[in-house]
Structures are given as structure tokens and as C-alpha cells.
Length: 76
Image (tube, rainbow, N blue to C red):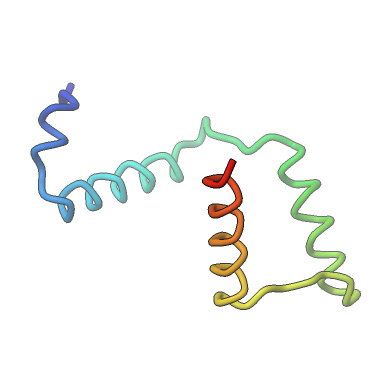
């Protein structure tokens, strides 16, 4: 097994490639299943989007919201 110190010495590009390989191997693992509630949440979101009830943010709106929440947390 690879030690965390070895990973820390790897260039960022190699670490990202390693993460991609790990995620890919997990995605193809037949024993890995999402919990039932994931399916329920996705079905609910899809239904709301199809009937026009869903609200979407632009990437700039999302960034602003995240910045605002980070500022709020840092001010506490």
C-alpha cells in the first residue's frame, strides 16, 4: 500500500490522475450501490425540474452564494 507521505511528494497532476483512476475503479465496482434515498432525491428533483418548480443558479450566482456563506462563517 502507498503511504500518505509518498502521495504528498507526488506532483498535483499525478495525484489528480490517481484520484481519477480510483474513482473510475469505484464506479465500475459491482458491489458499490447508492442508497435508496439517493434515488428518491433524484426522482424528486427531476420531477420538480420537469414541471417548472425547480430553481436553478448560474455559476456566478453559485459562486456569490458560496462566497457569502464563507464570509458569514469566517465572521463568527
